Image (cartoon, rainbow, N blue to C red; front, side):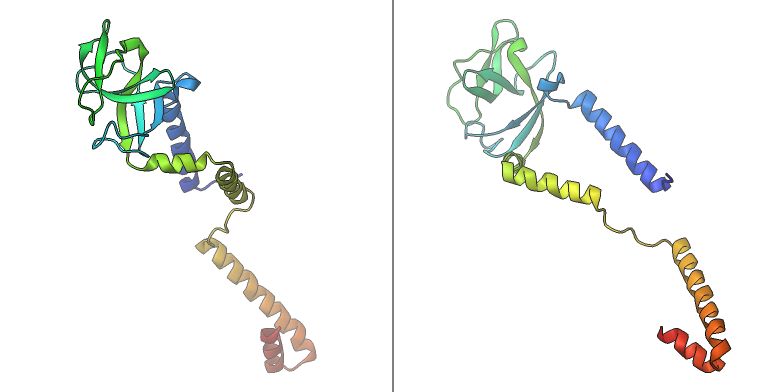
Length: 192
């Protein structure tokens, strides 16, 4: 199968991005260092809002001021480190809270430090988790794979098609010219 240089470059770029994602941004449940968190609640306002998407990466050390995620019974908490140590536990507080939290997660209990924040993106992720929306998206992707949109005709293909059309027109004119006078043959070949 022949591929254009643009198609090869696109394929290589796609594979490269997939490898980078797999090595650097793979989720924890796949053995990677990343957690993808959809923010809910108001405890981190004005920094983070409900419906935002936060990407956190596991690190060796955390410092005061870092926004981190950690598990508690009933879910995952996203708050800022305001004190403490890695061994005794960090003092954690939401930006919209008056006092620190009662939890004191240690470094090994922290899932990661916030690396990227995308406002409002969590709403789209939540929508994709709905079965009917997910089925629609997968169906649309499948349709594009099975029935790709037609590619525009290249200059080479256009010249080849025009040359073929001229050749067919000449053959028709010759064939019709045997039975009809030449001007009538030309007219008949253009009408057909």
